Length: 244
Image 1 (cartoon, one colour):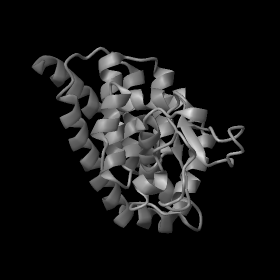
Image 2: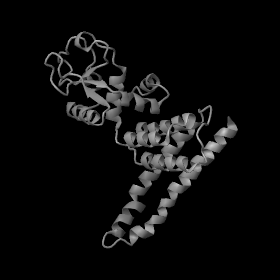
Image 3: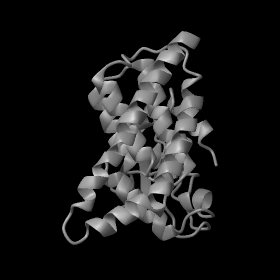
Image 4: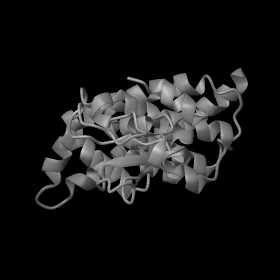
């Protein structure tokens, strides 16, 4: 595995070098009329140091993650791979939390070991970039919820209740407020569910079921399971490894 990992590490380092070359654009930034100097000050100051620290964090996560890859299937010498790595480097350098940064390294490891279509890899990266930890926590709860009964028979459904003590419809046992209320407010959870529904990762399961209110009962979609498959080899592994 050592030889394959060395080849892979070289390809990753090549992507890092291309990403680092963005600093050459500073001359162009400085030439921007009126605000160029101010923007360059931001880029070369705290923002730059913060981004470099996040980039260093991601490189460490990526090297650790790829060292566990048993087989390199993707063509690491291809332009598509280098472009993919540069994109992940850029987005991971903007990730505020280690958890989000780690998910980008998981996507890279999945592509390296499975060589999925590049357009799918790009879409997974774009989608993950739009999702924060709260979105992933809600998705994890939806993906791991036990199948319901009665009106929700056989469907994994989670409920967004305004209080942890609110009654759930018969056949449900998972309340997002009960599970995540110690981390996020009800307003944040409601907004996260709305955004996930808008992106097709959750579907509203309450409408048409015993006069249940809209945007209260949710189930994960096939797209959510597809994304979970990028973060780890199976939905179950992703759910287990992502427990707080």
